[in-house]
Amino acid sequence: MAYMLAEGLTFRYEDSPIHRRDPRAKLLLSICLFIVALSSNSVIHILIVFALISIPAMIANILKRMAKTLIFSLTFSVFIFVVNFAVGYDVIYSLTLALRFIAIVAAASLFFLTTSPDELEYVMRWMKLPRDFVFAFVTAVRFVPVLLLDLLQILDAQKSRGLEVERGGPVKRIKNLIPILIPLIVNALIRSGELAEAMEARGYGAVKRPTSLYVLSFDKWDVILSSLSVIGSVIFIYLSFLL
Amino acid sequence: MIKFESVTFIRPNGVIALKDINLEIEKNELVTIVGANGAGKTTLLKHMNGLLKPTKGRVLIDGVDTRKTSVASLSKKIGLVFQNPDHQLFSESVEAEIVFGLKNFGFDEREIKRRTEKILEFFGLKELRDRAPLTLSGGEKKRLCIAAVLAWDPDVLVLDEPTVGQDLQNRLKLYEVINELRRRGKGVIIVSHDIEFLWPLQARTIVMADGKILKDGPAYEVFMDRGLLKAARIRQPQLAELSTKLSLNFPFKGVEDAVERLLRGS
Image (cartoon, rainbow over all chains, first blue to last red; front, side, top):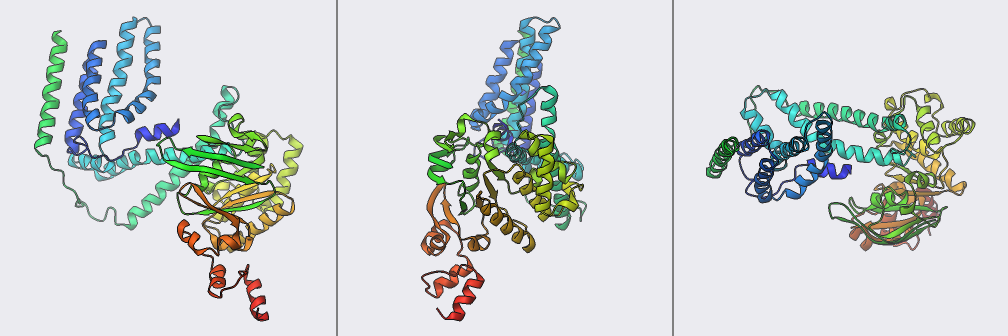
């Protein structure tokens, strides 16, 4: 299970018309879909949003991996449904909220599955965010798959020492997490310490405004994609209020 | 006994990690497994205590199919020690780290005490018993990891890359542990890139490449077969290389053996 999660969250480079776009265009597309998903308030609207998201996802060949990520958000979505239904909203409304949550996750994952951490860094720098902040954020994103791999190895090691994670009552199960969480946190701390030293050894922070090997450039296709995103979402929102 | 019956393992991402592996290892055997990175060595080990289940074929431990039992019950017989101590040490003290496994396997209070004392003594960890495992040196951590597994007395000890980052003293200690286990009739399986460490053991050696077993034979045969080593991308141990260059029929098994035979002029 954890393996599948790692798979769904890890960026993998693929050569597709969507992957090749300027990260700013991809971000805009994702934000537009995000807003459209947020503003839709009926099951049919949300289904249309899903269709809209699946078009670029299909072109980028990430439908399968996106589906894997969404399977995990399904748990929360069920939770949203149950809570809303329990406090007295009707079935349709609760369903809309639950589906909307999945649509929002899908819109966001479109960006993260087609944009490498490097590209994300360029976008944040282009936004003139402080360098330390950008670095910390990008590193955190990069650490997620690394931590998941750590988690898998820790699980294997502790299971081999007789730990049965899914055994016992609720209190015992929480206690069972200790042998897993402690090495996980300790490893993350060790890693970040090593990373800090390695960065300093390579001159991080030596100059105020470091130059970049790659420069973002917005081409014809980026303009087309961005215009489509903005115009499309305006039309969608306008129509959804009208109908 | 550990038995692999035409085991194939395919990872969730479609990579074939093991291809039709057939293997039998007796419980009192010393076996070393060598091969380049990605040859499938660790994957093979993880099948021995059921952490991984074969996609095709089956793995039998004492006649029990690993698919039909728990990792915990298999681990009691097959003790696996992984490469990185930082992936397993979590307790507040060295002593508690050893007690963890014993408690998991349901030993009673008195037995836990007795075994903990014995194993701390054997691994020279007595003075460190109250120290936090994370503050130990790399060598001490490794020793503790092996001690924590040997505490419950598995029939077979499986070591994944035991010599990584270990100094001479710890390597010698490792030989000592292996020899002691052999004396007690226990099995030891070692996966390692450190061929200089493996050579003096003169063990049954399994060579793996691309998820397959290329060769399964005694060390003096395997490490003298230069064609095989080339195919598996493994270097020849220095004494084996020297023996090859001297065209010896029986390679030097250790420095002492070499000196003695050279002095005798045979």
